[in-house]
Image (tube, rainbow, N blue to C red):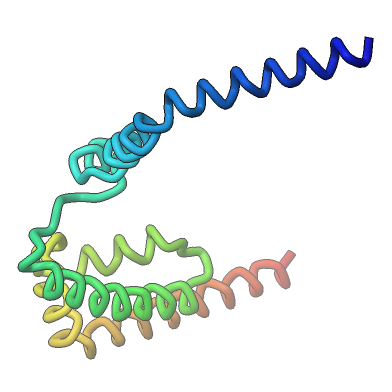
Length: 146
């Protein structure tokens, strides 16, 4: 009985080895095709992971302005959220978008707007902080009156 199990096990191992040998040339091709289907810009754009393909020649400039814009923008969003705790990221971004006269999709133009209008954005943040404090005081006064 033990001999039958050993023979069956050896036969199965031989079949597996033969199958692996048969599929060996095809496996790298299948893996490459699978990876290509997932990493192509067209597929990534269709899934909403990226907005558009960036040509290689323009990639350094594109990502430079994207990074600089996001750093400045995230800083303003943090300041807005600190000034008014009722804001979430999207609400703070909507305020910035409403103030921005540049094309919102153009990273360099938005960065230029942020740089040129820093005083106005900072004033808006201060204004929102003052309004939030006044609202909190009014809320506390209302509670005391009850």
